[in-house]
Length: 445
Ligand SMILES: NC(=O)c1ccc[n+]([C@@H]2O[C@H](COP(=O)([O-])OP(=O)(O)OC[C@H]3O[C@@H](n4cnc5c(N)ncnc54)[C@H](OP(=O)(O)O)[C@@H]3O)[C@@H](O)[C@H]2O)c1
Image 1 (tube, protein in one colour):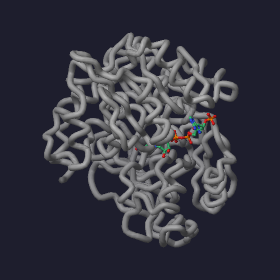
Image 2 (cartoon, rainbow, N blue to C red):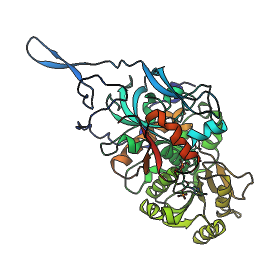
Image 3 (cartoon, rainbow, N blue to C red):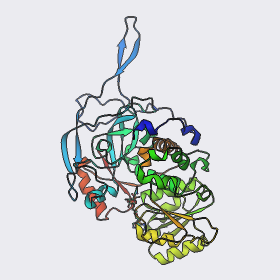
Image 4 (cartoon, rainbow, N blue to C red):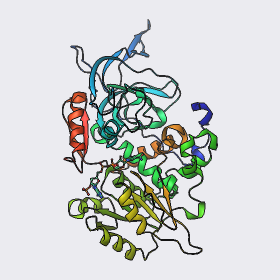
């Protein structure tokens, strides 16, 4: 399937009113490249334009200096159960179509999948490969197609397309499709933004596609995308086979989550959970967060959770959720695994005659056993890069949410050492010694 087959750039307007891209601010920020700088003073944040002087004394902007770096440092994974190998003199990835741009990576956000993939051999493409899903940096080559991105823009890039190493985060330069990039507002640094991407995409697809939340109706009047409508406007056979049922068949219109409904999020303090809490609140739902209340309660109240339930006594947690929702909970999201997903299913409406079905999304797995009246869902994460209308709808909305400070970026812990520091940082995720903040690895000083 080619991009053009699936991207008919017509219908964003039908399902979402894209906000005006805020005017570019000519800030005093300096661009710090991750490659060795020449002895000269640092460049301005926006690329220098050569001035052409005419014989009559006027000047006009000439072409931008071409980007001319050809090699880079990367982390390569050669085989499962190995550590990432820091490797120099690798080619800078090539742009392959008009919607792709090249981004100089300034900060990488680490995700659980970054250690689970090599350890368990999950989601590994042809080896050796470059991994890493979350990055933020500066555009060094803009898309050739007309787009809202220009060289020098500060962007967040999300690489759900893990089979394409050109797009991965563990390298100095990465390819990002314009519909999978978010232009960052001035007040959000690349370090703060780096860990947000995958969590935001997973949370919004879970809520918007699996549970059918319509973000056009958000309380603030800031219209977001109607993801279910966007995805269903695409021909079924143009989507990857393994996400078709999730996108087209699992929820019917009158079952969709809407303002006033309850949703319970088991593992609500995780990065994806925190995004989901905030987005569900924007859509007017009432949110129960099942978390370590002593550790994360204050933070989760700040994000808008309506009810906090401590996760340590699981039977009691299930009972509290059932009692508060009077046994009528129809929407659930689990970020932990199949055991907690089963507990959550047990707390949901079990489906009597004529009752609407309940819907439960498992980010990390689903129970083997069915629960009467509860439909299980997996996040169709590929929709983000395979369906540009979906990706673009989400990215335009994220730009507005960040600009208006309606979405908080995750708490971060900064790991030192650049690319070479990533193995050690991932060890800390593996052994659970960082449990709460997201690890961010800056590639620049
Ligand atoms: N399917 C997909 O496409 C997709 C996309 C994104 C993420 N994921 C998966 O979703 C999961 C969450 O990812 P993330 O990046 O959001 O995680 P994260 O930010 O690393 O979340 C870790 C958090 O989970 C909480 N936690 C630990 N044990 C828990 C338990 N037994 N019950 C409830 N909460 C517990 C911890 O909070 P406390 O200990 O403080 O309570 C911790 O803050 C990962 O397994 C990830 O691989 C899947």
